[in-house]
Length: 370
Image (cartoon, rainbow, N blue to C red; front, top):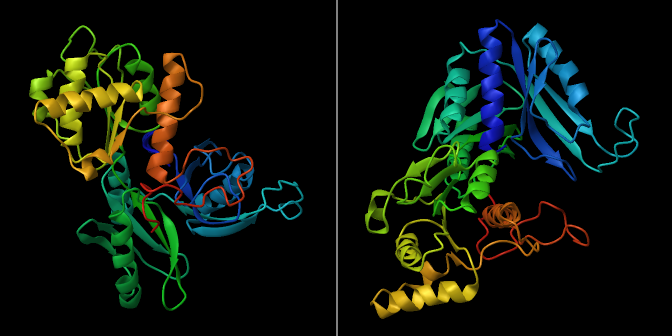
């Protein structure tokens, strides 16, 4: 799930508790074959049958709601296997060709582990919730190790290092792992949202910032021009009124994606230097390849050169080849590339693709699967 979906789910949960409603969270904990969503996808179900977010394209929701209502009544969590093959799914002929395991648990906001986990999700903090799918116990861990909860010693010795390894990856993903004794253990993941920083607050930055925010990015916009850098133009974004010579005040991290789009050669030159000298894994320059090369040549003439590793992070031009023209289309092209790059795909057509849809990696920058 992206951060926007998580925010919507948590907001609905808080509102439900304020009204005195009970709720359950259904989580995809296993996927085999083709399925609409992956492990870690969550859906909130309230005691009146209302739901927030989706586990599939509509195939499973009605059945999962019925299971969740029983879980809310009984307080007993449930693990249900759903076969999405043509003939097996309740005679509905869904025909997705895969199967999905869904765990449903009633939300107890007074349980310390649950409260801490929901707080981590709300804050976008790095954390992992370890849940044996058979047997008892739960544990919440952070990047430095166990925080709350209790697991059998042998299970903890296996699950905690495995969860820490997943938390340390570039794009942490939830998964069900198998312990040495055969116990299936679901590791759910909370991680900071990816950050997108735009150097430039021009007209074409507005749809890019808006679409990125809708996809769950932590959006930052950097520009010295106060008339352009306003909350009305960039709702939901963090604004930085910085001139190029003051860029040291903004420190990108490893989860930051930087895009240079000032449409001003001097500002772009200084912003590109700041971007390539930062710790950001992705640096993009809007415009033709020749423009980025000109910026690099100008910097080289000033004695500023970059290592091969720094230049390997540079994407120019940015975006997938969609034939984009309007600013909104260009934004779609850029965000499509960012998603493909982050998750390890090459952005090609699915039609005609011989392998499974979610097979990775397919390009050199792809994160190592955990």
